[in-house]
Length: 108
Image (cartoon, rainbow, N blue to C red):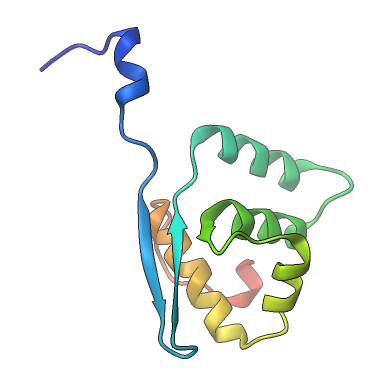
């Protein structure tokens, strides 16, 4: 096996991406896993005094949904839609990030 060299780092694979079909809406989105830097930033949101789980959720969606690119108001609009569809998006994001398992609204 080849030993990693510093010059190899830029050519290493990035986080996985996936086209997620949302059959209920007749559309698809592109989602991606999170990299370590994003994981740390999301962790800071969880540990922050002025933030809560909703802030974490918003940032997770904005970080993991590549297409379309979401702003805070877009996430707010999504949260007005069918909760089972939004929860299914979170499940796929978790799967892509290696978290797996089932998701319930209380977990988010």
